[in-house]
Image (cartoon, rainbow, N blue to C red; front, side, top):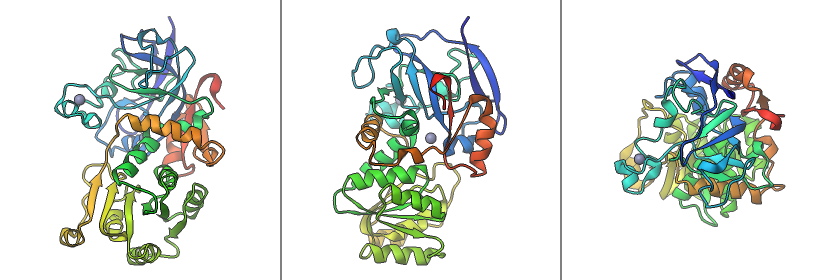
Amino acid sequence: MTTGRLAYMPEPGSVELREYELPTPEPGSLLIETVAAGICGSDLHMFADKHPLKSIVLGHEVIGRVVDPATRPTDSAGRELHPGDLVSVVYFAFCQHCRQCARGLTHLCENAYNHWIASPDEFPHFTGTFGTHYYVGRFQHLFKVPDNVDPLAAVSANCALAQVSAGVDRGGVTAGDTVVIQGAGGLGLWGVAVAKERGAHVIVVDAVQRRLDAAKAFGADEVVSFDEAPEPGDRIARVRELTDGGADVGLELTGVGSAVLEGVEMVRPGATYVEIGNVMPGVEIGLDIGSLTRRSVTIHPVIRYHQRFLKGALDFISRNVGRLPFDQLVDATYPLDDVLQAMEDSKARKVNRAALTMGPDAR
Ligand SMILES: [Zn+2]
Ligand SMILES: [Zn+2]
């Protein structure tokens, strides 16, 4: 019997390493060997009981190697899969029969997480990415990782980069636009890079200087720190000054409710403000809707993404190898056995972005 191991969260705040027999994939499904699994803010939210998912096999960011492609011979771009190929996987599923899927809004599938929340005691066990293996269901998309891409550069492609790409697209960012990005964490850095490639002038706002330095390394034209602009009004004034009265597009990537109140004031009348960071239900803010109407600012909340954004994300990384400092994205790696330590270090912000690394690719 060949077995693998995984990190199961039976309830928020606890994690168990468990061993299960490797599943034999059903038609359309695929087993991959995990190479790297990123630790994302959402994983930390689940662990801290601030997320709707309460008991799951942890992890959704992943790069892995194809074991046997007999049950799924091609990726979602129609390219042949071979044993050992590196792939990136859309972490949510689309069922094809719910009302949203039927309308073509597959990223809003009502059954997006059914595969993930199943108990690991049931087949196929490996439903989260914090494990030696990960089971890609038949309703999950996956794409080959281009040969020149380092696994750690692409480990968050299926979450942060694809998500931000969908947001930048939703904002309609185009050459010559000014874009204000709130938050220079993992999402923010990708946001800078993607908006820059579209020809925008990018301003980043964050409280932490080392994160703003990273934003510069990823191409930010201007940064606004909380040190130089401690009050919301100062930051709004500074961004308006840098953008001739307000940015064309705003992106909220902080996950802080009150950031929205600042952000909608940092954009010009008629602008689009894309909300991505606040994903936890229960965050209430006192929004001046009358002012928004008078300025005709559109707020576009964005959750999950169409699968084409994951292929686009991988291609984006591939063509920017050597141009962007991808080695700055993940600053700590841990073996699966140290998953609790990795979560705690991430929560305490001792590390910016951690990843679990497994198998012969680990480093
Ligand atoms: Zn994530
Ligand atoms: Zn559906």
